[in-house]
Amino acid sequence: MGIDVLVSDGLHLSRFALAALLERHEGVRVVGSAESNYAALEFAELHRPDVAIISFEGEDSEAVSSAEKIANLGCRSMLLTTAVTRSVVRQAFATGIGGIVERSVSPRQFVDAIHRVHQGERVFDAELTVAALNNSDCPLNRREFAVLEYVARGDTVVEIAAGMHLSQGTVRNYLSSMVAKLGARNRIDALRIARDSRWI
Image (tube, rainbow, N blue to C red):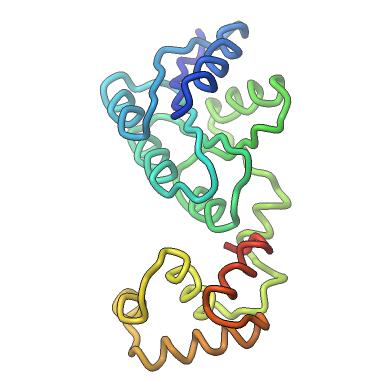
């Protein structure tokens, strides 16, 4: 019995190419094609494919959220991307998402990843996952890093304080410490440094 696969990609040519690639492999059947995260989730709710492949770029939290929701339906899901940040790896690893595959892999590796995810394995790059979960080279402590993640979302000091259940003064202290530790000019520069280092 083959693996029923849903392909979700916002780019028509990319979506078509992925579907065509998978159809060439025995044991894999493309049962759905979605051009948006919403459409992918809707299809998964109605048809329950074995594996949903969700393409995303950068920090598309909506795509990660859709993959998580699809996984919660009892389907397997995996993310396909050109680049991935550590925060996305942490989020995906902490949920039921089956794995993250970069577009640079060979077709054979891609299809193999689908089979492994279908069998219940989790397909994550080991080195990136360890780095994401540990952030061993990041000088920030857990609280400072949490504040930085709020900054990455565009939250204000007031919103960060509310989200972390801290006073605004404490949040400002964490921001100052974070900027100093990273040798940054301000919180925006600190965020740039963190992103360049793939900590977030």
